[in-house]
Picture 1 (cartoon, rainbow, N blue to C red):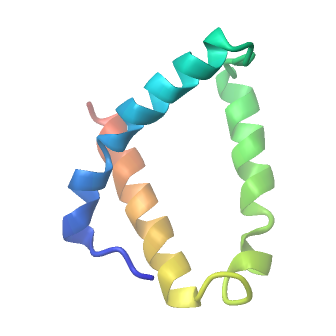
Picture 2 (picture 1 turned 45 degrees about the vertical axis):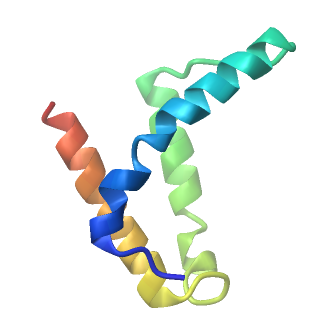
Length: 81
């Protein structure tokens, strides 16, 4: 399945729903751990280390590349806010 760029802005507000769900789970005992920048960087580098194994074997290469492109654009836009 491919996500068209035009549908991304409608999908992004779903994060609010995820936050409400997380709060509900916290009320039921979920422990939320907030990471510092160094831990986030380490997690991202570790995750990106498996990208070659995922690309084209688990996710079609074109979809994987488009998802990374959209992710990078989103992060760049968010950093400028």
